[in-house]
Amino acid sequence: MSVRFICASHSPLMQTDINATDEAAHKDYYDHMAAASRELADFDPEVVVVFAPDHFNGFFFDLMPSFCIGLKATGMKDWSLDPGPLNVPRDLAMDCVRALHQQDIDVAVSYDMGVDHGTTIPLFKLAGSLDRYPVMPIFVNCAADPRPTFRRVRAFGDAVGRFLADKGLRVAVIGSGGLSHDPPTPRIQTAPPEVADRLIHRHVASREELDGRQARVIQAAKNLVVGEGPCLPPSEEWDRQFLDDILEFRTDRLDSITDEEIDRDAGFGGHEVRSWVAAAAAARALGMRENELASYRLIPEWITGMGVICGRG
Image 1 (cartoon, helix red, strand yellow):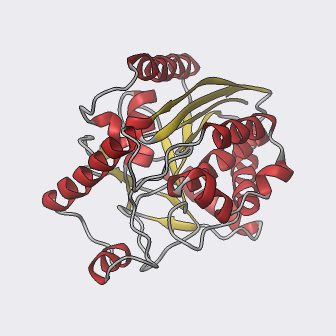
Image 2 (image 1 turned 30 degrees about the horizontal axis):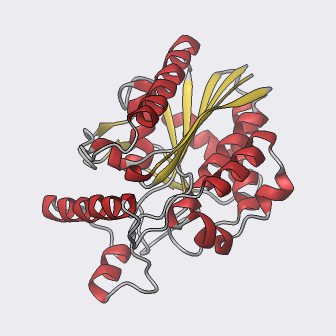
């Protein structure tokens, strides 16, 4: 058994032509993702497990699980990313679901999971395509209040890792999302009725809706660059503390992170670090012995603290 571990921030704004405030920061991120991609190819994983959020594209408030494992999954047309099927090892994914249920861990199952850029960006950046490797996609609810606690997220990731540890496979574990960022995502508590309806009732967004949503995010990013709202700027202080905690896997600190802390200090998108915690727990259960911070930069035009952690065992 061996494992590779990659946690990486994503930002759909990297799919646009928005002006760079620091070309070196972009290059640093892309260079380290390319290095991680090469290491992954050399490792040649037999399965890739991706813990990722969704941005109200595949999961909605009509039925919002804390965790869901896809038995089949398709990348959606999202932020100029090409859609297409993932190569999901269905029997392995179902065996994982059954094993978790035997441990009293409630995880939903999807026979037709739609995954957005939270899952597809890391696959494109690290694998080059959605179907190069067998991929088990795991949704972690990071956007829809109420969310699972960080303690539950850690326990969930650990259980997934322990299940895979018995299989004798070469496993790559990816955590996608974060770090601190505050995109203009609507909150159901304050959204006008027509927007709340979109958050509740699942539907496929029209091209016009997607274009309008993307234009709003791009404008919010441009505003952030010049010091204007509505988005909170990414917080290097919060990111550095979290990165240190995840690298050392300080479970007391990680378990104690609250939604209130994230909303105040890291922004709405900061909730996505739940995916990192689940992925790190799974990788450690698989025998990860070392990990390191490969890259960290604040990139305001991507509205995000962009980090990359790599590990192996």
